[in-house]
Length: 151
Image 1 (cartoon, rainbow, N blue to C red):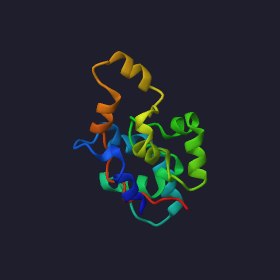
Image 2 (cartoon, one colour):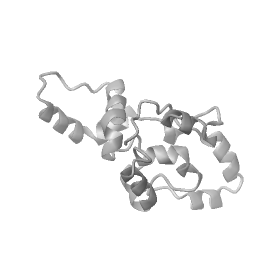
Image 3 (cartoon, helix red, strand yellow):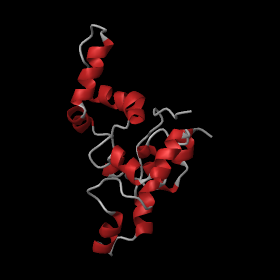
Image 4 (cartoon, rainbow, N blue to C red):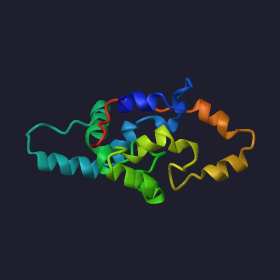
């Protein structure tokens, strides 16, 4: 079973509406990682102008950014997530996951916080009308088929 098939078979994809945290945000990515994009362009020396289109930003994250620890949006902090979840960091090292975001989409969304500004425990204690099982059925991730699994 491919990585995409494995993720799509998870309960996270049973809902019809993907959550905000599951979407790639090209505008945020372009702003947040401008220094990385400029540095890579200087090192490439291919003579072409820097492509900052939304599609180019998503392609950059899928092909390079995810494996370098860059976050896909403002709602998920890759570096923080890996610091808080050493088992996921180890899984990346062993080739089980290509990045923390894929782990979060696959199973981490059930019990782990995606960002230092968000606490799952605090959220559910302040919103008792939202049950964890209900939220698990409603949340889903984007099509991550283009993210390459590290081997």
